[in-house]
Image (cartoon, rainbow, N blue to C red; front, side):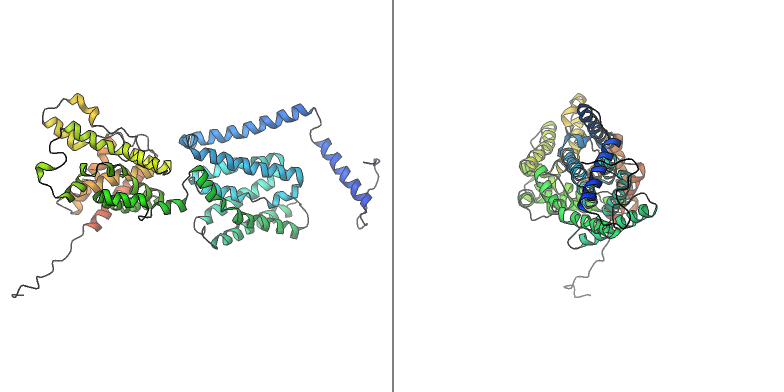
Length: 470
């Protein structure tokens, strides 16, 4: 629109910018961007965009594959893609319409959305990939990329401790402070100038507040994708929920066992920095399947006060008894899925016995002259645990149940008992697929021993008030 000759002065410093000069400056800017940018056939432009987009998405796939490939096969990956597409779209729309609006896009919200459902080692690489469109396509992209990476990680850290109620506004102010310091640092270096500093800071402040305003959408995502956030885990741990009340009514001994396992798991998880809420929920629901046949399990059988010859296993063969016990895993999975429990809770049901044997009935089978080739009938058909939380539940479940048979609770006896169970699981290959270190196993072992010592501590014997000789 119009012509500008080489060497022509468009506007002088301090001169009033008229509508004509403004139009000329806008035209000059567009022409400049067209010349320094792409000016070839549009087909190649679209092809280049598609290739870059596919490269970024492929990178996302590869990151998840190497960190935890199980995510690729559940709803969490679909949710991750939605978060990636949402913020990529916001980035590209802002660049097309008003590049200065990028300062108000709440990129830190992407990190908070990821934090709700993923472990720390997943959040950082996925969040960085989510910001790649900003880095590649935006003016001053490298500077903005660094600013929002730092701000997102700081927000994620503080949100762990101040993620409820009005504390979220404190996180927003901390995020704004980080963005302000980062921007001013780059501004003083002359690497960015997005306009008057005050206006820039107002946009950054607005974007920080939008992160708080947009966070409640997490509950919609959670419901839509059937995911498991910290808030939902707290809800699942409420023992007044109908499903847990049903378990308590049908299998009261199992319910009490689950509560004890939950407390033991909590202590073990805290000792190694595992997800305590997740393992507590897993412990509460791991034996759901026992409600289908509660009298099959000794913790419920003892409440029926039946004579020995009338108890559930008295007239069954060891093979039949083992099959009835093993069935509680598949029954638990069916109950959990019918009640729409998250898959991560279902995984605890599948893995809490792994592929171990029903030891008591296997030993009984052999002592009665049974064929050793029948061993597959005594093996659980679950899956080996793969996470720290699943390992913790497997160990605590076995130790809590077996500890009821102990006669001697001295530190030496308790230590040998715990070590024997952990070594037994290891020798059976139950830790082969697990993401856990020897150091963590030692810490868990020490914590469980301490917990058992506290539960079974000695008490003084009170005198009989009816004894007149006292």
